[in-house]
Image (tube, rainbow, N blue to C red; front, side, top):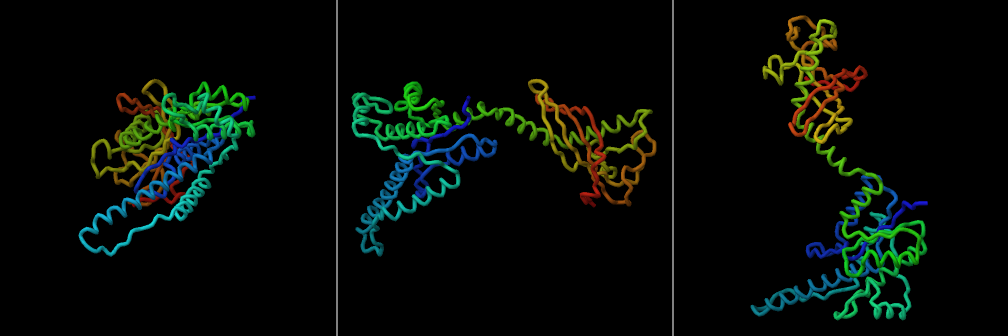
Length: 367
């Protein structure tokens, strides 16, 4: 049976943060980015994980940066003292104080983003030495010394976690292409688990995998968001064309329904401005060809009271809603339009008044 649950394990290089203006930050924004991405797309089968050694490494790095700031401050202070007495004392770096603060901040991040910790495995010294001598990944460094000690501990901790959690597949997110090579890591992973192991080199690579694996169709979602914004920008044109469509349909001899006259977007005559745009709500977008889209939407218009009770063709019309003079009513139409992206043009396919909608119920009056 295919397993769909994944543990996403972040390497230190993916969480690296060196912002000097925010020294209390241990991680960069990648964890929050992935968490919000999964949440917004309702993906629940991925668990975010951080090896304990990665957390310890990040805290240690931040402490070194804080200590460096103290050293810089004291050095500048000593340099300035050549000009005479300065009423500022040199500061001592309290490592335990800042370590406590950083650990607290890490705990808040772990809780906020529901991060699971992968404990550092207890590895026999002989195994570490043998892997270093044999240059077993992530150890490497021919002619450069033995590099990859911390990565090896992270990797062996991941393998132990996989051995104890066989219901999960594993994704290691790392940009270390020298220490973590997919083929070597996948072969060793198989000795510990029958699950799937993958390496992703960046957060964007991880998102692409999630998109494909869980059928999120992010490209289509992004495209449809762009289309929606483009169509909303054409609201005035849509309003005018819907009004023209209604008048055209009702001008037929066999059409007996009362007519709305439209002047505001055609003639610009404010004296006859009795059909204005109010809101446009897009319900569905479907692509019909490369740059053509059918769109279903709800269009609300303001039907302004007018002394002119004749339409463009000269016969009398009855008001759709009975209301007092000088009182505006909002009317809702269900419309279907065709949008040509190349031409940035709109064609009206159908228009139907929403018989269930009442401006009275929503108390939508504009005077």
